[in-house]
Length: 166
Image (cartoon, rainbow, N blue to C red; front, side, top):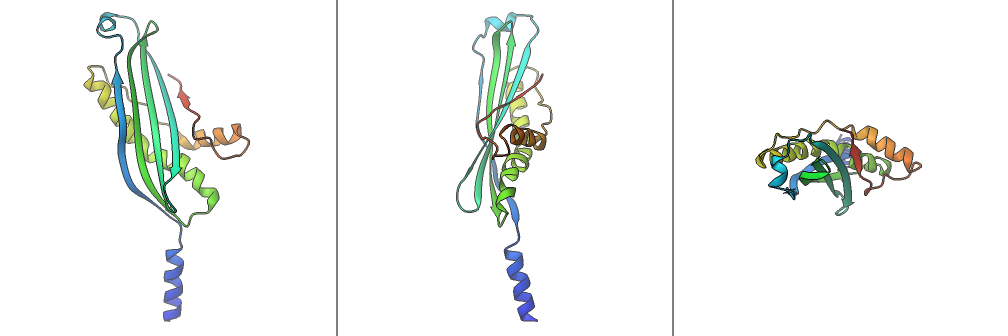
């Protein structure tokens, strides 16, 4: 029976695992380059949102993923405000088949980080004196599939930005 128990424990220690080690706000900034004059403009603001994912391997089991969000609001082609935020996480991935690591880094990790990014961006905009911008949900799985199709089934590019419609 001890051989069976040892074998079961050995199998469990080699079982694939995915764990969050740390989630943190790496960087955030807000700019109002045309203030105070633009604050008196009554024009209709136009919003542009960009999201990008960067991932790199720290060691044998730890990966660092950063979700970068940029929100630019303009009135008459002049920037009202610009918020850039980098929400990061360290994720431990053990005994995972190689073909599953890229989807984890491009889908699961950004899905975990996105609510933090969205909250931090909304908070920063609100603290600047504007109505907060609540980013719409993002389907990272669909974006990953789209990137894979565009790249001809090669690994998703970590430096191609995603531009979201208004």
